[in-house]
Amino acid sequence: MKQNYYRQQRGSAATTSNVVPPLQIKRQSSTNKISAQPSIGSHLRQILKQQFIPTSSTNNIQNEIIRTQDTQLQEVPFELQDIKMYQILNVLGHGATAEVKMARHKMLDIVVAIKVYGNNANIQLLEQEVLILQLLSHPNIIKLYYKLESQQSIYLIQEYFSPMTLDNYMKGRTIKRLSEDQVKIIGKQLTNAIAYLHSLQIIHRDLKLENILIDPQTMKIKLIDFGYSIQTDKELSVQCGTHQYMAPELIKKQNYDNKVDIWACGVILFRLLTGLFPFKGNNEGELNKKIIAGKLEFPSFMNGSSKALLQGMLNVNSQLRTLVGSDFL
Image (tube, rainbow, N blue to C red):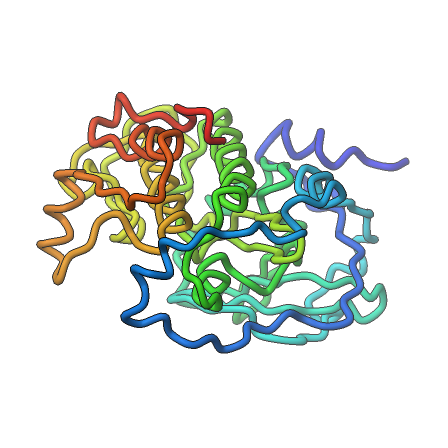
């Protein structure tokens, strides 16, 4: 009898080992490579004033469908869930405790991303990440298929989506900002994913350009790296995240809630719209003061609706912070 994977996942965190999660059947002929682009240097101000013409991909009806579609999955026999069944194709990225590799299942020709944790991994955070990922099913959030273990490592077998992060995508562009139409496409997906997480009482706590994958052809995005995520309805006090994206309450080491994700989303959208971070400093102390003050300076080319959206997201008063506060998205 065919088992209902999603019902089993959502019913209890203690999912039995014989439940076989699905995998994505996806053949890859090649991977996208980021071509080196010249620095815009001292011409930044002039370039930022240019008017952009959206690429054809942003107006493609088929791409609009792709951006809202969840990953198509197919169940895989339990006996084929073995790390030895995978051929490593490429290294996609690495961090302090984990490395992400692109791999292909040798028998089924399935392409996946494998997140590999070594012996220095924080087991408590890792188990928390797995439990949270098992709860999630959203078109703009990466899927966890299953976890494997060996004596040396722990492997998270995940959906392979794109080798390109939003950070690399922006750095690879000659013009370091996107058009408003492009930001709207990304922003709608990002805010939908954040709202979905918050509806499940999940806080990501490390939203940033590096933790968002993008397919440049369709402008579809997916959130990744839930290593700092937590599911709770209580205020938190443990400081975590990436400094440039931290909300004022994190900088001041105060208690916080899911509004820190909204602040980080505002930082991301500000960067996409302008090519710059909203708050900058020559050192950590100076950056902290700028974030706490929360004074926003908008370029002249930004319209009222985009300013209103960012002002709502980047409100230093977390209780007044809003995920969607204008007609921009």
